[in-house]
Length: 211
Image (cartoon, rainbow, N blue to C red; front, side, top):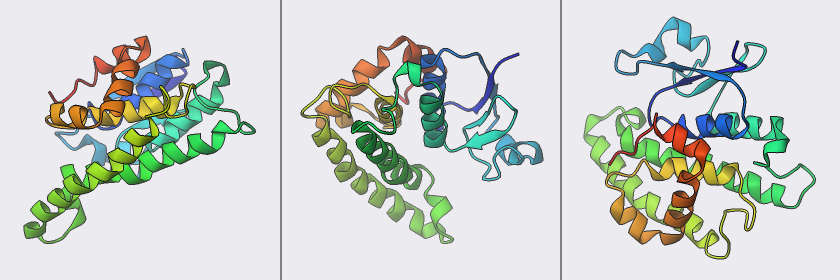
């Protein structure tokens, strides 16, 4: 019996949790949720994630957790031998928290506004404005990450971490990606390096880029 079960759908932030499951070398099952038929809003799935969103993860004891960043951070801490997160007493821990939470609470929600503008207004005539504003906001928010990567190969300098995996996941959400990758060359460099890791290569077969 697998240790974990990942509830997933392509490109809905399931990539990073799956890649981290691969990085920590544990057994896990994958349960694809049929978003087109709105299975994520079914009574059965709402018992796992009451938000009706993906991904979610069943832990060793069968209890569920949700939020992609939370899943990634839990696994990184639960398997310290994988080296995906600095220890609590290490100096890099502060920046690890900073970048994980910046991406999860600032960059990620901007993508949500871009791809799901109808979720953020009761007026259908507002959706295009919301999408346009999100596209504008993504530029300075990615610039902060690009600037941070100028002095080191990874977000934590010389240290590879779950932050880099989480960032790479979001880079595949751009459609089309070419102008984005040309504009943010440091992000593109790190994303390419992360994508070469065996764990991410395997996960990417389930989560192909938009283009």
